[in-house]
Amino acid sequence: MFIINTDLCTACGLCADVCPEEAIDQIGIYTIKQDLCTSCGICQQDCPSGAIILIKTETA
Ligand code: SF4
Ligand code: SF4
Image (cartoon, rainbow, N blue to C red; front, side, top):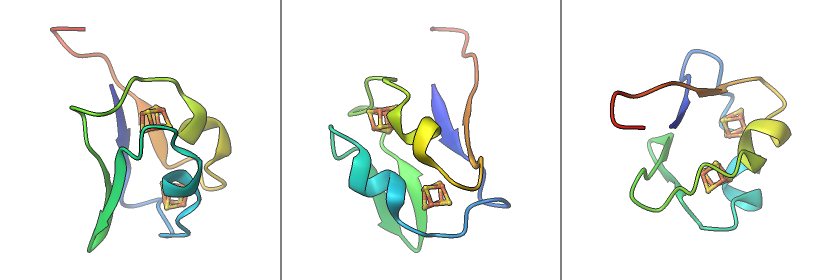
């Protein structure tokens, strides 16, 4: 699953703009709604800060 590293995120909003599933929300900080995210990777490619990282989960 993809998560946003809030230490690197500059809150530019680009990831929320490019996400085709509208899975990225700003509620104070930007977060990825895992129930909507399809792990397409577009946000990771477009984030200028390298703040979006792919992590492995036990269920994935
Ligand atoms: S594109 Fe990257 S730096 Fe910009 S809001 Fe999204 S995670 Fe943060
Ligand atoms: S991986 Fe794709 S679906 Fe998931 S938050 Fe990023 S752009 Fe949206």
